[in-house]
Image 1: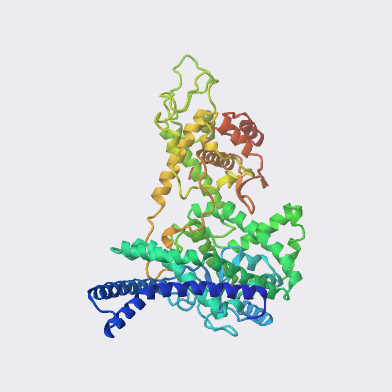
Image 2: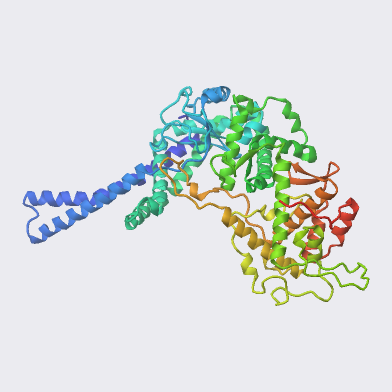
Length: 628
């Protein structure tokens, strides 16, 4: 395994973990040893008498019970399926150059090569042991792996316990070949300590305990045996707590040994590559939260997320002086050229990302279809804005908001305009502006019987705990043009809005959004025997953002209505900004000053800044708009 100091520490900690296993076995065998002594003493005439007879029976029964319980626990620990990261498996036939790069890297490091390669939609890379019998050979799964990916041919110097190399897919598209090799060097070097028998045995034991705890907590796997499951879980957790410190130090030693061994490989280039890792992470997070999330909520999943992160980071390099020089790297060979069909792999990882971060279906369907970046503005941005605008007007209809007569219109002695005519017949931006602008002397407080909507509807109604809210989290109502920064602060939900009409409308709007999401969310199905070893019912595994407040929802819906009015009256078009998501284009120029004007209307009831902006661009709020 080498003479690295970290390797020696890792092996010492692995032996400590194995000693805990040996002690547990010794404790389980102790009653049996006492029973053997008593039985042997009785047969030889040393332990005779009624008391010894009773002791032999009691101890023998206790020994059998302890052995039976220990056997059950050992069976569960050995057979429980350890958790496996959701990945897209890559066969050697699908990426011969990538396998060759990893093989050559393992030869330079003098370590066993990984048994297979898989991709994950995340900015990280690691080694993962998949030698458990429940995992089987690295074969394709229709749920999360690309067609044609299988076990493939064995890598050079493959061993029976060689782990799988998991690579973050954004790295392949953003990094150059040399940078990828430098980043993977310390990861591949970890196969050396992994092949050490003591470390491998300790890892299997810890993973088995962890899987046993998870299995005992799943009541569906053992109906009618809740007490037995509780006992198995207690024993597994007890041993896991005893191993915790030693297992953590063992992994630190393995990482230190791998880093020490990898220092001789592309050390200077690895320093530069680590800068690209941080940049890729920032671009990937921005792409998911600002660009992919709106599409996922519309039932569309971008099929080229990895290619999109390159566009996002290129745009960042154009805007940010700190990123200058990064775009010049694009002339070098990208690491995705190591794949035979980069587009197919990108599509597979994009679908997996939608499953992990949003909880989307495993396969495309009528309500879950891919979308290209060229179609994104029309298929996602335009549909989202018009859907939000339609929802806003439905809520206004529910609140009984009616079209008020125009006070400037002349009356020639005839009857006054009928104030009972609903504005829903002509959904206009003016209807929204008039409602959110308080009239002098007639403003009412939220909860008063004369207020809009149900007077019994309180803020508690809005605290509905939306699990799949249409949100961008604490970053404010992004996803709309001009929303560059935070729009809310912690505690805004408990602070009364200066505009009571906005508060009432926001609360009703939040309830409507929650109702639609509850109707659209299918019930979580249990895990089947042929599903991947991660819980489909718990999707999304990594939610991107927490729910927005009702006020942020109202801000986004009002912004959507303004964008629809701009598109239908002055010919504005929806666009895609790689860093900020959906954006409005007027005469081909991105609108960047809309957010503060909308916030002024929503929070203060002041429509003057927004009306002045509408007049400046020639947008007519009284004109009807087309809703989604």
